Length: 394
Image (tube, rainbow, N blue to C red; front, side, top):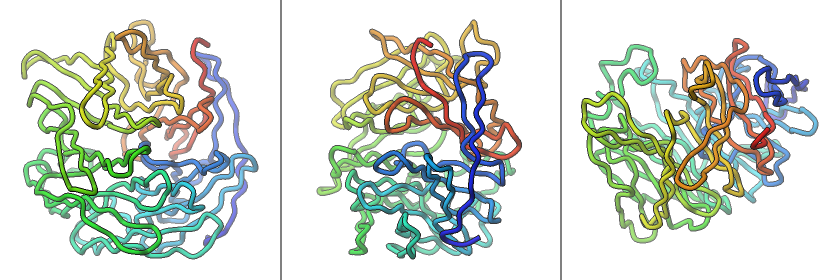
């Protein structure tokens, strides 16, 4: 397959047996096909196209799915593939950005030879190299500004870790304690260059740019959430840095942070009374980047594994729904509403994914109209992308 090649997808519609919600499989179970990480823009400006990553060619490449016609159009044909989670739509630019050079995990350490950030037109044009990541480092997910004029991300020192077993997260503690050198970078999508916003010897992974203020960048210290001060803000123009939602080590944990459409930050927050306590009390925390106007919404039990907010900020979607009256709730996606000081869940549909790999995580997100959500699942053997109607109170 090559750039511009088209595959016709026949969407498969079913009805969820538990909730009665219509669920549509958008991909064809040919290889693994997913959408990139859930904090990045994945829909085109008009909502008609969905950016996907697929290994159907033998390596991970970027594709655009036209939701009206079912045409799956190949956007890249990189010999080393693309990083399957790092691609993002560049709003208003008619293009996406990708990290070229897939580095699956520790098993690729010996063959690792560097990565680059490229700009890829959505109309099938040639890719343009914007930035080459320094040798010996690997790039994280890309976060564009609202106008798509730049992408911000972190690159992290590539380490030879002794505790990697092939199982997801097996080397997380060693990675944390090795304190790799990391730099938060901003790359301009017109090819005019790049600048470093912040750097330190702490493991930095996820980076998110405010959709309302390109000067505000949230980055995280990676590792087990109860062992790190997770959330940090850097002001790009001045390089000022401050912690957001200070954590008590061993007692508080925070993660899966993202910006809402109005520029507020949401994170999953949990707390416990002692380091040996087996259970946490879980919340959705919503806060301004300054740390002001904090709102906490408590779950009656466990929180979903990942959450994302609807465009109008009236609903959230999550990828587990553990409730007393819902057997196998871990296999469900859910809708969430904030009522008073509570986060209330409602099952949406089953996802039945294995969770065995990062690309099998559901990572549900809302479509731009807020009327449906998309999620990933490998319940049919390969990872596929599904769409479910989202209606509270159904």
